[in-house]
Image 1 (cartoon, rainbow, N blue to C red):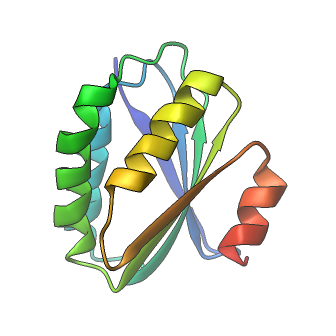
Image 2: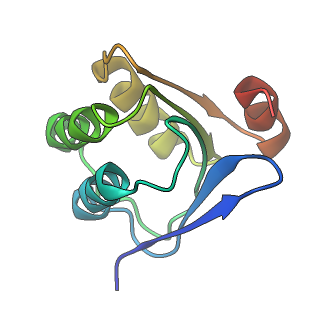
Image 3: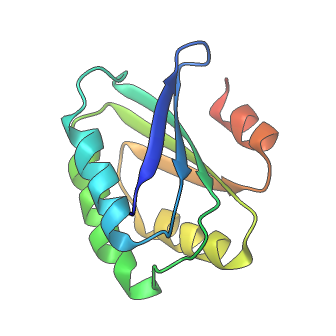
Amino acid sequence: MERILTSFDRELGILILNVVTDLTPRIVINYYRDLEKKKKYPRDLKVLCFVTAKNYLVQPGDIGMMVESLRSAAAKYNMITEAFVAEDPYITVLTTLFSEKAKIRNYRSAVFSTREAALKWLEV
């Protein structure tokens, strides 16, 4: 079963994501579709995403459709700031490509190797 576990940390005021199984374009797109529908999250949303999937089934050619789902979700927020924590070099490259392609006025992201660095960048 493909899915991303999400929880909102009220103390830090951030959404935390964990990829539990394989990372596929479908689960990324579904995550952004769900995010678009959420009304309870802050409109200036900060996200800490741990990318530790068993398998990475996303190819560079998949990034465009993933960015389009992000663009639709971002339209519902003032700002979405995502910090990706990734140890695998392949996912670091994919995440960097995603971030570069996502030229959206109210979206910014960065990739980190540690939780601490990501939290510092998120300013929490």
